[in-house]
Length: 156
Image 1 (cartoon, helix red, strand yellow):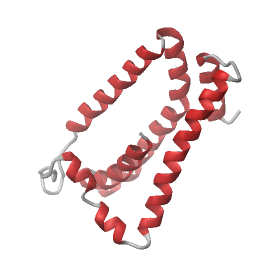
Image 2 (tube, rainbow, N blue to C red):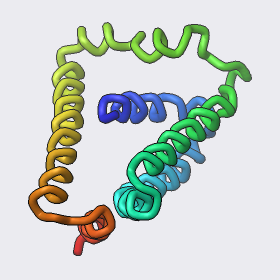
Image 3 (cartoon, one colour):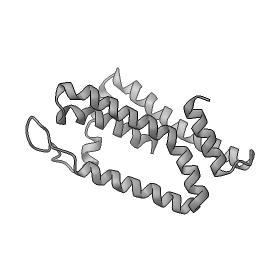
Image 4 (spheres, rainbow, N blue to C red):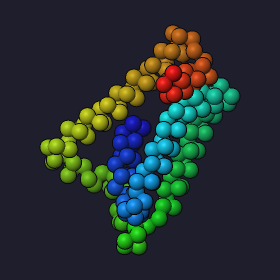
């Protein structure tokens, strides 16, 4: 998922200017980052609450449903304001990876992409191991763990 997050972050930065006027981009970025901050703060605690109330398999089902809803909302995104048409003439997989040759050839961009992808990957690994450690060794429940993550997100 961390690698797909990098792909999403690049894609939304490239897409937003094609559907918004120049003076709308600043406000849209503000809304987007506010939403991201709230999701990062509330997501883990909501997951802990869902796991506690529904058990883990049902919490995963709820998570999968949110991904389907997200995909459905992406399909309904508006077209390019300047041309009035969608620029997606390739299938999604080919389109997603079409820029990698240019990135790989650029000596300034390539190290940044490698660093960001590595950081996201290993952060996910450490985050997963931390949760396992806190549950198995620290005997934390999913609810307690969720509250702890919420407090950390608030800076407490």
